[in-house]
Length: 101
Image (cartoon, rainbow, N blue to C red; front, side, top):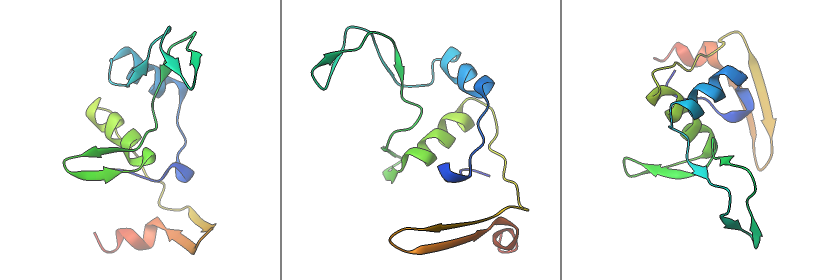
């Protein structure tokens, strides 16, 4: 998979640490002021909205692009069915979606 929404992610600490150690994660350094307060510890921005190749990407897809750029892989569990209700209802079935690929 190239990317998957955040609500479906299971992320290991090992994955996050490899991204940090590989220097791929944008970072806010100690001493920087954010919202009127000085940052005391590094803040790693694993999830942020950005534009990649002219397309706006949400924070979940940005994270997946970090993982893919590091040489790791994003995996999908095709047996999971999900629902989400907000402004609209979404019913996800990766197994059925894969029928179209």
